[in-house]
Image (cartoon, rainbow, N blue to C red; front, side, top):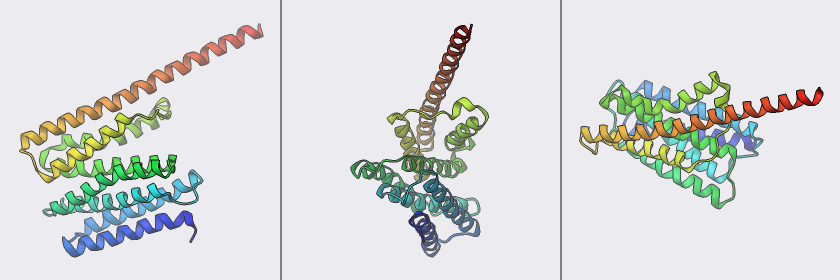
Length: 247
């Protein structure tokens, strides 16, 4: 097996092993198994394509940490699917989420200290963050209300907007606050899943988290729109200058 396929294959195998472990300790319904396996397959396909797209020979050290996170998030997704048909094993769900959140800080540290920061790693890390937030928002919405789904859907609505509006597909500049806000969403949703605060307190914290998320995405949209207008103005000026030169 080529090195390009080895990493994704290990990830898929790890996902199956985690599901087997969960089935043996807390049990899994058919829906949990199906969604867990689907997560493993989706990660395999996306990661294999990413390695090809970025011409990466193999996963770097930080990518391997992120792959562990993706596996844990697949377990959270399986348990969330279980919650639809029966009471979920909250300690298991929270433990997997907490470890995934802790490793979110580890993979960045590893990438910087091993000089293996890459576009693939940044994209992989961001997508795992987004999916964990989506899965947790689905779980928490069952007890708090459907409005919590807005937290998990924000990233994907942004992507859909990019399909519809070409100017929203431009690359964004790095911004530490964006990563911090994503971490806040994960921490807040995990705390809500663990039910460590009174309901009113949980609702208030989630509202604040949603407000921060709205501000972060709003700032990105504003920046993209401003750059789009600026590019149009520059292009128009160049066109006028070229027309004047011809005449």
